[in-house]
Length: 183
Image 1 (cartoon, rainbow, N blue to C red):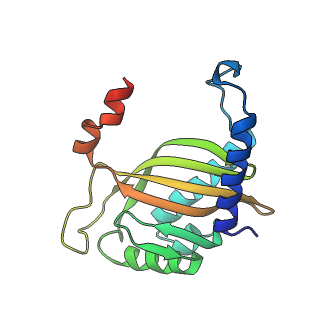
Image 2: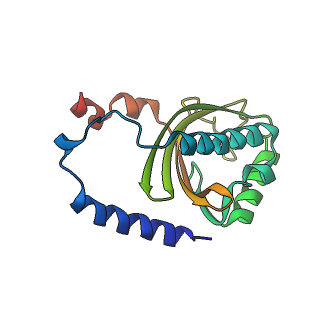
Image 3: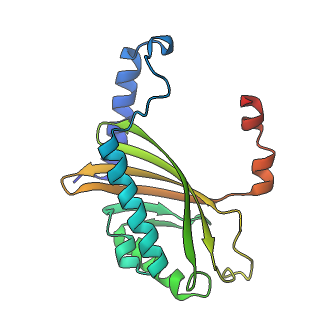
């Protein structure tokens, strides 16, 4: 089984080695074509759907079933968990708290692209409905979150090797200088 470090190192080596051999952007036949094979996209979307189902059932064992044993997971407030067991235990504890005990995840759009052979990245927005107060007494943001996940292909299918989640600050997004510059 590839570890996250090996998978990411491989992705970097492959990206650097293929960049020099890549055709000029004008030589690309169809710039809007999906670079993700349909079967891979469907398989990864099934993993993501199982995660949503597990979250909504508050079944954190099922939530981590499609992660690598050495997964790294960073939650919306910067807690960094190493390994499937730590991710499961942390999420289970959070789902026993008023914060998530009655919550429901509502998935949003997903972007997906290959990083290297057998390595895929997704970026997904989602909302949590029915969240209770945060441990500090605050309100969970209604604007949702955005999560980046790195998947690796294993003999057992696509597995999550890294996840990083962060709140969406709606006011900041409305004034995003990167989006203004691109339009």
